[in-house]
Image (cartoon, rainbow over all chains, first blue to last red; front, side, top):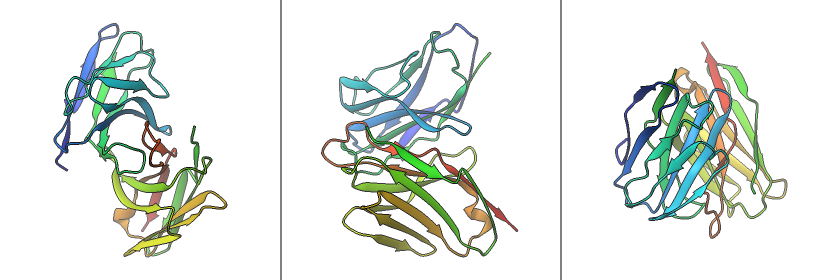
Length: 113
Length: 114
């Protein structure tokens, strides 16, 4: 289970507040990803990064922002512009390219009221 | 881009019976097909994967088959046990150009009935 961590495990916020979810990996992976998981929706890609200081929007990037200043870290900010932020958020990392296993973090469950 | 369809969304089988989950993909360039298992409240974890240069791969009670011509692949679990109850995701990816990594199916909730 080691190698990629997310914190906190549970997060509660009031509507209108921005919140940042942490993701750290010590696997020396170049690529990192953020997914959102809702019941029955599978894994939906929010943002991904193949290299430091570069990242790309995924399928549902609106209302989210990321940074990749260090290889090990890929924090996700859920902004007040995200209309339905309550969800389970998963971070993953892999060697660069689309044909490598993705290793997932334990996830952060965000509840916004 | 790639599109992965997964069926069924829910599968209930008797303990000891076999379970089969099927996925189709759209991009003929895809050459890597992993399967992930996610238990309730936990992270997805890789259980088996297959690359396009082989048609079948087995690991104890789990096997995956790939039909490149038809663009579909399947997960087979034999002699199912209660601990097999989970959500299973298939995915597709390809080397060299897969900047956004894997494309996942929507998942299958496998229920093992005692």
